[in-house]
Length: 91
Image 1: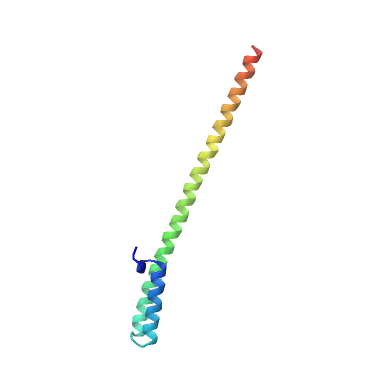
Image 2: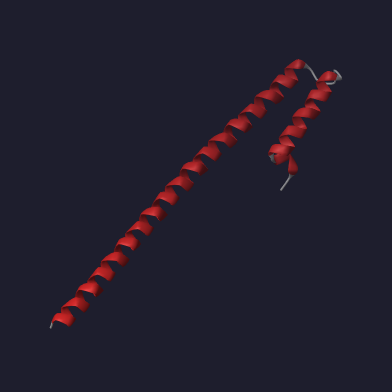
């Protein structure tokens, strides 16, 4: 993965832009544009992270529900076996 396409890469590019601005090699308008684009990238990443959290929570809830159903099935099966055993003993 290209390091420029990561949070570390973005941070590095922002500091490079800041250095260029301090050295008067780019204008305030250019630095504003860089900041705007960076803000949009960060907002997009936050939306993606929020979606992933919700997706993972939904999957976790589905898994938990499935486990509860299986536990109930096991309990019902055990009760049935116990009842059958008691009926056989009383016959």
